[in-house]
Picture (cartoon, rainbow, N blue to C red):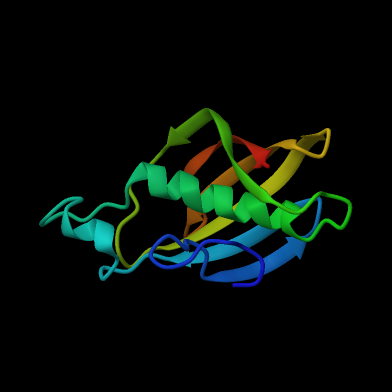
Length: 135
């Protein structure tokens, strides 16, 4: 809770398993049926929305810069999403293992990470996420 600004119901990181500030991070998201999105996505066939998988990857990416001492304090938000691909559905009961690595950081305000989400070792989503510091 001290590493990211997100809170329920938008906190999509349950546990950090590896954190190398400025380099990479790996975290776990346990997908459970009691999450609010499953009421309508979809009744009788709950699927985790792709945008929430991407958001979970972005939150893990945020861990990479959260503890870098040389960066200005502030809120990093999405600035772009490239080459995101979904390879299989994510359903309640799945455990997402999300890994991100920092690709670039420019002027201490703009960054890019490469993210992957896996369930039981199988790739379910991957892509590049850009972020920007909001004043």
